[in-house]
Length: 450
Image (cartoon, rainbow, N blue to C red; front, side):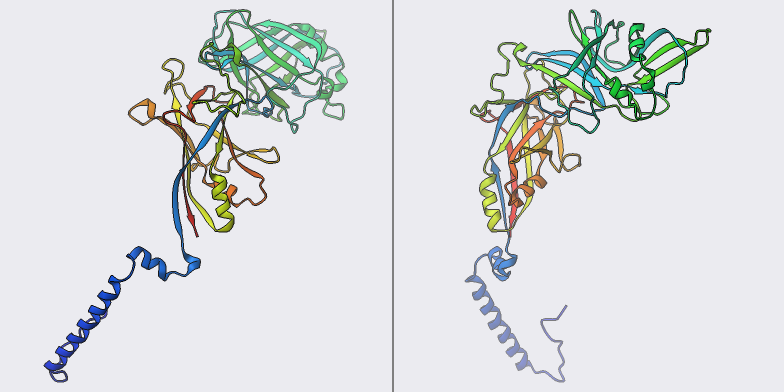
């Protein structure tokens, strides 16, 4: 550090010189004080010293968000690891029915010259069971008429073509709720005879079995109160399978044989889930009446599992900021949505709502993509229930990367519109506050303008 005063050296400096130095310093200090007093405050002075190209403005604002409840049956549902069967009811959302379609895969090539079918069984591992387990329930399996492929798109509202052949309605055993159920169903021998009717297709060659027998449409029928179950259609271990058919046979001389068709094969079968939603069965005072109505701003919006209704969020006000961004450089510091939760005191509470929500964005060409944040810890997406009162619970969703992409997009491809939904693997619905509610959606936005 440089000294303000030189050291005293009596051999070279005089007392008069020290007085003169003091007066010079006093005059300089006074001049600096007068000059500083006439300038702007320090925050502006620093800015004035920075070249124009380095100037920055940090802006923070709350932008309005419009919420709408939407529904589409054209949501992709193929190659999901979990499939569902049965029916469930919600007093707000009505009835949801789940089915699935799957191919069968050969366990090994056919090598028998003669066989007699003794019996046939279907082994299933139900991962979850809910509903009325005391009432009778039946599994129905119908042959599909069109070949399905692992790289094709199939949708939750897909129409299924059938050949007219049905395995039959097989009664389910008594199931246990809220636990895994390993069950064995007796299948009529006629299905074994039907599927083995031309054994030249049971080889690993150009005669593809899945072209010969294209697959099955699975349903659960409940004459009384319904049941709702799940199972995995993806093998987790090549040495262990959970869902498969076994045809038990003999060679005519008493030697036992068996032949297996896999549902949860290691090399995956083509499979897709089907969900049917009937919102009109909800309780009259709770029924969703403004689905796909973008002219009505309801105080509530909804997100339903199994590709049901979802919330569309329109980020109004971002377009005007985008106009600024086209003229000046803008860097997004923070962009966060806070979505308040609605509890009805009966069906919906802190313990019933989904732990997280997901977002996808829309494009002018009609395509839909997950936000770049989804799948990262930055995205969050979780519900915050740490508040003292449940009325203050919110979902936090960070969307800064998406917003930056929207502002930088000069093609007009990215729209300031998001769709908020629940993954089908999460079985709970949620109701959200919106628009003119006492606590509507908050869009907290902070950016730097260079």
